[in-house]
Amino acid sequence: MRVWWIIGLCVVSTVSSMMPREAQGAESVRSYDLLRVLELALERNPLMDGAQSVIDQSVGRRIAAGAYPNPTISGNGGHGMLRDAGVTATSAIDVPMRERLTEYNASVGQPLEWPSKRQARQQAAEAGLAGATVGLVETRLNLAADVKIVFYELLLAQRNLELAKQNLDIVEDVRRIVNTRVRLGEAPQFELIKAEVEVLKAQQIVTRIANRVRVNRVVLDTLTAGALGSDYAIEGDFQIFWKDLTFEPLVVRALEQHPTLQRLVTSIEQADRNVEFERQARVPNVTVNAAYWREIGREAFTAGVSVPTPIWYRQQGQIAGALGVKRGEEAQLLRQRNVLIQEVNQHFKDAETTAHLIDVFQKGLLKQAQEALRIAQFSFRQGAASLLEVLDAQRVQQQILFDYTQARFDLSVALTRLERAVGGPLL
Image (cartoon, rainbow, N blue to C red):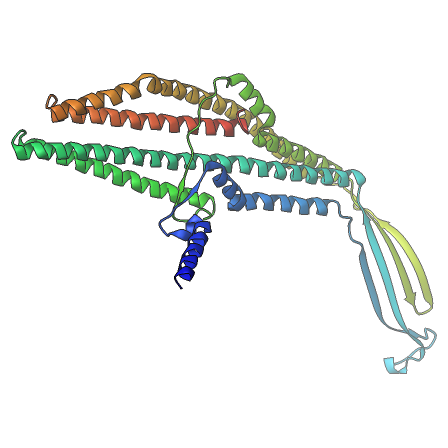
C-alpha cells in the first residue's frame, strides 16, 4: 500500500511539473516580449480589419468596373379587334366584328459602352485597389509604432517601479539606523521625524509609479484587443543607437519606400484615370435595339440604334471636379514629402542627442552617483556623516537613475518614430 502511495505522489509531481505555469498557480504572471506583443496586435487589432475591409471594397469596385452593361428587355400584349371601316354604325354595339386577335410585341436593347471610357474606369479601379493595398501596409506601420511606444512606456514604468522600491529599501534602512541612534540618545528626535518623512515620500512614489504601470498595462492590452489579459508582465530592453546610422540614406529611403507616399501616388494615378474617364464620358453610350411586333394584319421585325446627343452639356462640371481632386492629391503628396523630411530630421537629431546623453551617464555619472551614495552610507553608519548628507546623496543617485532610464526610453521612442518616418526598419 505504501508503495502505491509513493507511485501516486511521483505521478502527481510529474504531471504538475509538465503543466504550464499559468495553470500551476494564480499568482504566476505571463510575460511577453516586444515581438510577441507586436504579433498579437497585428493579428487582433480592429484597425487591421478596417484596412482589410478597404481592400475588399476596392476589389468589389474593380469587379464592378469590369462588368458590361445589362440589356433591357420589354414586352407588351393585349386583345385587339379589327372593325369594318365600310359600315356606318349608330352605336358601338352595332359595329360588326371582322376579326379578333391577341396582339403583342417584345424588344431588347443592349447598351454599348465607349471602349476608352471603360478602360479608364477599369484603370481607376485598379489604382484604387493598389492604394488600398498600400494603405494596409501603412496601417501596419503606424500600429506597430504605436505598440512599440506603449510597450516602452510600460517598460519605463516597470523599471522606475523597481528603482522606487530600491530607493524605499534604502530609506527604510536609514530610518532603522536613525531609530536606533535616537533610542540610544546619539541623535535628536527630529532626525527620526525627517527619516519618517522620507519613507512616506518614497512610499508615495512607489504607489504613484505602480498606478502608472497598471494604466500602461491596460493601454497596451487595448492595442492587442484584450489578447494580453488583465495581469501580465513584459520583458525586454530599450533600443540602442547604431553608430553607422546616418541621416541622408534615411531621407532617401523615406522618399522612396514610405507607404504613405506610395498611397498618395496611387491616389494621384486614380484621380488621373477619373479625369480621363470623365473626358471619355463625353462620348455617349450607343444602345442597339431589336423588336418583334405582332398585330392584326401585321407582323414585323425591327432594329434600331439610340444615341444620346451631347449638344448642350458635355461633362464640363465632372471634368472640372475630377481635375480639382487630382490637384488636391498632388498637393497632399508634396506636403507629405516635406513632413517626412522634417520628421526624419527631427527624430534623428533627437535620437543622436539622447544617445550622447546616455554615453555621459554610462561613462561617469552613474558610477559617481553610486560611489557617492556608498561613501555617504558608510560614513553615516560610522557616525562621520549626518542624516542630511545621506539623504542628499540618496536623492542625487535616485534622480540620476531615473534620468538615465528616462533617457533610454526617450532614445527608444525617438528611434521608433524615426522608423515610422522612414517607413520601415532603420537597418
